[in-house]
Amino acid sequence: MSGYVLAIDQGTTSTRAIVFDGDMHVAGKGQKEFTQIYPRSGWVEHDPEEIWDSVVSTVNMALRDAGITARDVAALGITNQRETVVVWERETGRPIQNAIVWQDRRTASYCDNLKRQDLERLFTRKTGLLLDPYFSGTKLSWMLANVKGARARAARGDLCFGTIDTFLIWRLTGGKSFVTDATNASRTLMYNIAENTWDEDLLEILRVPAAMLPDVKDCSADFGTVDPEIFGAAIPILGVAGDQQAATIGQACFAAGMMKSTYGTGCFALLNTGADMVRSKNRLLTTIAYRLDGETTYALEGSIFIAGAAVQWLRDGLGIIGSAAETNALAEKADPTQDVYLVPAFTGLGAPHWDAKARGAIFGLTRNSGPAELSRAALEAVCYQTRDLLDAMQKDWKNAGDDTVLRVDGGMVASDWTMQRLADLLDAPVDRPVILETTALGAAWLAGSRAGVWPDRDGFSARWKRDRRFEPDMDDKVRAAKLKGWKSAVRRTLSEG
Image 1 (cartoon, rainbow, N blue to C red):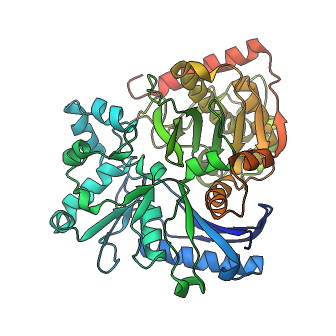
Image 2: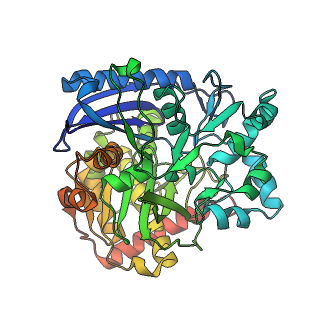
């Protein structure tokens, strides 16, 4: 059997398809951006049909780029933007409205109402999540309440709910497979992560009929077969995971205590806690890292809403840089005597603060502050926020220890300056891998190992290769002073600070 494995990486602003060969090297790629829809302030939507079209076109691009056909592909893996909600007609497959994206804040008042009923503890105990518009359940509830006739149709079993993975699998299999995986289910506010089942109590609170929910499978499982009319051959779909969990797998963070952080538009850090479902006391999320062979591995997760987006703001908002790559050289030239702090709370602060009302601020400006100092502050903000997450994780889980090595991926890790400053402020080593396509690689491994053409967990871990390790090299007193300044800046930025 061919060793080629295809990964669909359906992201927030673009869809990518990557073909990996039998040696797990990238053989072909395709990428296509799609429309971001903003109907009102704080609302974010996607057209599911446009997403579907982008998947079909990027897969065909990747196959052509690799010089192969669908017949050469042994297995397909899917990774996706998490928490984004699609509802479609079971009979026709047609969405009843645009998808509501994870960034969307329209259910903020609904979440506040549930909190006033003292229900957040119940949701957190069962799902590991907080009551925030970020997650899928309140989005689905809103859709059922606001699309004419939707709730009655859902109760009759006429409608299907899914995160993006479920919608794509439905389309790829011609409506034969209505499934999701445990990682995507764990982000919906409706899935009991201890019992690994949809939770009847939470469904009743959110007024969601169980008839519209997909079956939940392991991350590596038989999710159905692609209709051969789509790409020219039948391809088994054998791996699915939400994007951050797929990156954890792609970084081979299979042992408890291993940690990865992905630096894209935002930043998401996951700490593998093994079979230990750690209940956070520091407002981190308890989530499913992956479920393989029926065994669930858990993680603590911290979400930073703004990472690379802060650099985009310097470019597009302030116009002080022409490209993101310029920030590295500017940061190196910044005046070391100036302590400029950027708290990038443009859309609120994520973990461990979860302050939706906080807004961005800059502290420490002088007459001599310029593009170099602001560039350094934007890059350092990512490092400071990661330190906040690591501190919270170590407080939550005694086994986290002080010997954490952080494995990193995402666009920002190409900056050597940022990775060195990250190691300095964490006071911990930072490992950058050779293969940076870790999200797609994780989905591909789930599928390829299931198909028997790629190695098992141990073999995959052994093949993970480090490009460079960044060791901390900052004076302890300097680090302490910088962290103190950051905490002061955050305190003054919080909406109730």
